Every structure is written in C-alpha cells, then in structure tokens.
Amino acid sequence: MSTCQRCKTAFTCGMADTKDSMQPCWCTALPALAPDLYKDAVGCYCPACLRELVSRQSAPSPSSASVPPKL
Image (cartoon, rainbow, N blue to C red):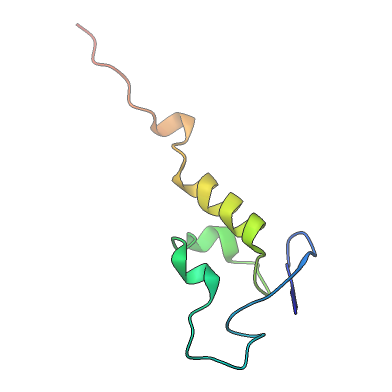
C-alpha cells in the first residue's frame, strides 16, 4: 500500500504496489498535473486528492475569464 503524500490516506499505486507492472496505474487515466502542482511532491496522490488537483487546474481562473467586448 502507498500513502497519499497530501492527505495520508492509504491507497494502491499500480506502479509501486502491484507485481504486475504490465498494467497501467489508475492515475494514467487522468490528465497530467501541471508541474507547479507537484513540484514539491515526494510520492503519489490518492485518487481523491489527484482528482481534486486535476479539477483545480482545469477550472478557469478569475483572471483568465473572458471579458465581453465593449460596444
């Protein structure tokens, strides 16, 4: 079992915790994280934390919201 480096929940990492390395880990089905979201990571994230981080990076920031043109 692996431990989430963010919330400390135990979970199974397909790369580190299984003997069948021919199967991809569950995390490969999710989009990759932007480097600034994992630069300080020392391990894997559990499914819940990784999904939350992925959703944060795909949500538009308030500064990048489109502004309607002035008429």
